[in-house]
Image 1 (cartoon, each protein chain N blue to C red):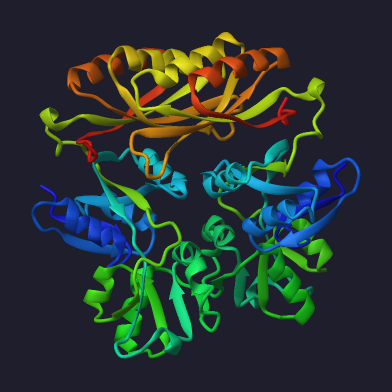
Image 2: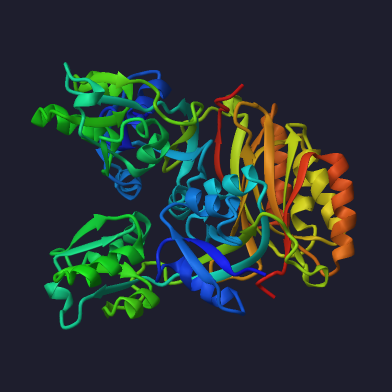
Length: 275
Length: 275
């Protein structure tokens, strides 16, 4: 049973929203300012699970988070997709013309750059976390200062939203995974997606051969990503996500791939959030 | 003939180093503060080519740069690998103990975080560009301030290196590509690598089938990356790099893949920098 969940960011952050959407029974959250510390909390048994952004439709995979999960042998026990919407917010009774400075995470500023071109009087300043700026504006009652954050952050920190959904690319979906030290949480009957990792020598056709096995075993590939293995030229690691109807098909594929590839590893077996 | 090259960052940046290493005859560089403007300079015919970081061994692919190349139909005409080494530098005649603040690009700060744990008196502050901080320290003769940048930046801006190669992961290789509006620059006899993009429906085995064609045509896969196509569920784009001995083999594979995949496109045909 997952009761305590480590998240990256504070209350009102997108990871907090995921914790509210994903779990059926309410969980307590422990906020951290880095993914390293978020994972550390799980490793110290301080949290039962961690929520981590793993890829998004604009920037692709967040490779350092794959590395964190892989290095610490954590298990993905679930996934959740969230459409990230950025909103400009400030203390009540102010207009956009009153705002002199907007603080937010570099990624949020980048995604909202075009919106701010119409307001050249606003200075954009990089900060650690989207929601933390909203909290600071509230705590210090900072006038003429704006935050770019979620509607949840506006609600928690009693700020007014001056402009909704100000990011340039309107559809900005991020995939989050829920990770644990073991995978005892997932019921076998519910499993219809898996994340695997394997290594292959740089031999012509070696990847095609493995993909043929997956196809023969009725697995559908939803993601593939090669990464050169550092310090080992001509050897590649592959991170692959597959979906399937019957868990027995995946079991069969696993036993074959385990023989064919080096360092074959199942990173997670869980329920597909997109069906 | 490439004479003027747009780079991201100023003199002394890693892109500047690549421009020095890659071209046999000296080129003039035009510095830009964003990849958007770097590419814009080529589109306006102000520069003959642009140099762009495209992937690195720590963070993986730089997806927004793939998107820039793809959207503007630019051609990759060459590639270069650079081992990124970060150095702490400051005005001469100061020790690390004298340094109070270090400014650098968020990625550089992240990669050197562990080094600075032994110097808790130093405040780390995010900035736009690694080399630009070195230039500012030089121009304003700022004491007690450090930059994290290349040895070239230290040389150009007359700073002393206080600590060499301070990034946590010592092997930090970045791949850069040289892009142009057309691919007239590359001699057919020199081509032994290509970057391609294609789309596939989410049909079981569709990727395996394409990879089988590549393998049959003697192409070696050095990179593969799937990206969901925004607004089109269950359809994926694949960015693939292949190497080959004989350009005729690639030509043959091209003609088959063009029939099998939707939106098949060659992003570049060029000389493999790793042989």
